[in-house]
Amino acid sequence: MPPEIDSPQTLSSKETGPTGASGAPRAVTVLSVSAVLLLGVAMRIFVTSSLWLDEALTVNIARVPLGSLAATLKVDGAPPLYYLLLHLWMKVFGESDTAVRALPALLGILSFPLAYLAGKKALASDVRRERELGWLVLLLVAASPYAIRYSSENRMYVLVIDLVLLGYIFFRSALLRPSYGSLIGVSLVTGALLYTNYWCLYLVAVVGVATLWRSVKAPAEELRTARRILGSIVLGVFLFVPWLPIFEYQRLHTGTPWGTAIAPTVAFAYTVLDFGGSSVSEGWPLAGLLFLLALIALFGTARNERLIEIDIRTVGGARWEWGIGTIALGLGLSLAYVSGTAFQTRYAAMCFPFYILAVGMGLMLLKDRRIRYGLLAVVVTIGFISGIRNARTDRTQATEIAEVLSRDSRPGDVVGICPDQLGPATARLLSSTKSLGLYAFPNLQPPELIDWTDYALRNSRSNPEKYAKALLAKAGNNDVWFVWAGGYRTFGIKCERVVSELARLRGNREIVLKAKPSFYERMGLDRYRP
Image (cartoon, rainbow, N blue to C red):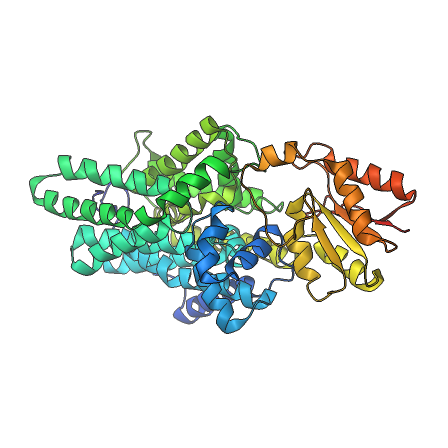
């Protein structure tokens, strides 16, 4: 595997600023770092949004009895580890928004020390500089809009980030000084990654192939170490074998029917932008700055305080971090495109730690400490501005829908939901309104869970007019409320057809709320009186 990245070619072992100063006063440094860490923790805890589709669905799956978890996930399309952790967590802390989001927040805070240790492992031959890189990577993670987003969202992606950081630490430890602890750690992390998110398959495959190559081509004194690490990876893959039958069923019958494939180059660009928090305007310059620093780590050699020489052949610095992360992501994007599978930038959580390590190495190449920490301050500041936006942005319009229904509905009223993907978030907010009947399109099924099995085929066979008549039959002389949104893939205009049929049969459509494009999960609300 990789030689030490702090070779003279890329990262010098000694440095001072242009005036020979060693850095800022210790008190200023301690206060600044403490402020960043406290803000990073706060950004992960204080979120105002209600749970949107994916989060609410995650809670609903995790609350089923453990004996039913595998069967429930079989039709959802996800592996079980995060749901198992959340199930146990909810047994202790409950199911409120704050309680369930506390788990990813805790995992996000755990990424701080893991990022520090991973940075130290990347520069393991220089005690002073390994600590500096460790702190840089820690601060980058603490202020990262991407890390903040997925540390404040009740999904498995922050667990992926933690596991990759932990795996990097074990892997580097095994390379430097193989021990049973580090080798067992590689095995356990490998298995845990596969049980957390299926995109980690690509990362495990790339690391496995690279280690296999090393076990054949390495110098004689390194062969034994490489082969022991390869054996640990293989053992970790075997831990996944019991889940393979369910994985195969999911591969054939679930997938990503809600989205379409995009070109790998476009998806890569989206990923780089999202690592900078491109969902807000401040994220665009941050994404560019992070990418520039990562490129400096890959191609740059520091000649003096103001000059970095670029070698297009790449240099030793972050070559392996770039290589593993980029090839794993590229492999996943290419296979997704060929197979027609959708991609979301959250899937790139498996390569995010490698990217942040490369950014930290790029900062280390800036020998003038004033420039280095000035750029770090810019990155942290913009990152937290994006983080504040994340904390204050409501991700779902279901909050508005639930407020109206809780206030204006009457016992016996019926609520239809189309598409069913609007169901989990809406039903969660209406859980205390027991007098309402909630029925999702197309089969009047309960809205808390979604069966993704052959989803497109099921929707193509659905009958909107039949569904509308069934809603009216359920309502009798009560009001029918209809929560809906158009434009969902595989539904065509079927939700619009439900609207038309309800209006035809009841004769008076009252538009209570319109779907607002400002919401990530937008939806409207209609009312049909007797």
